Length: 197
Image: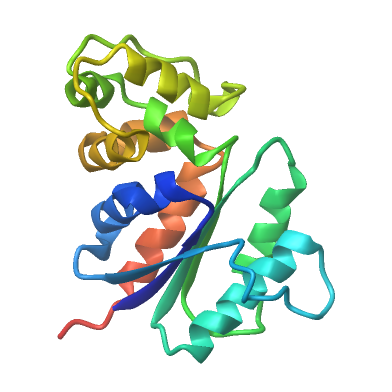
């Protein structure tokens, strides 16, 4: 299954999001990353709010390029209406292409803070259970702070990729119920309909 994966930045595209997708059923997927802010992809002209139109434009772009499905994740960044807009794009009838769209609360980085066992293993130092990830004001900074304590020198994107490979998905679903849980359900559904060779 050829999947267009649209996200916001280098931390998602450094392997973390792909590792999560593979663990949610996309182990045979071929993933092509794109940034949601790609200036060559213009917002869909039609009714709807900004992120709805942007997500629909990416949906139509994926269809035009011949992808079998699209995965799109953006950060909430404190703008609650983004979740509704992305849910509307998920349900849009403007395309029949299979899709899994989600909004990370508050940011994708929060998902990396859910499982302290994975954090401890990746960072090679004891990490205590973190606050509820979706309530942390600046998850990216929280991750950076943990990384500075680590004797394991690595880039933050590499840290995320390793955590995504090791974390307990059930813990992530339980601790990020507003963002990750619905996204994971959508991703699992997309890959459940993958035609088997």
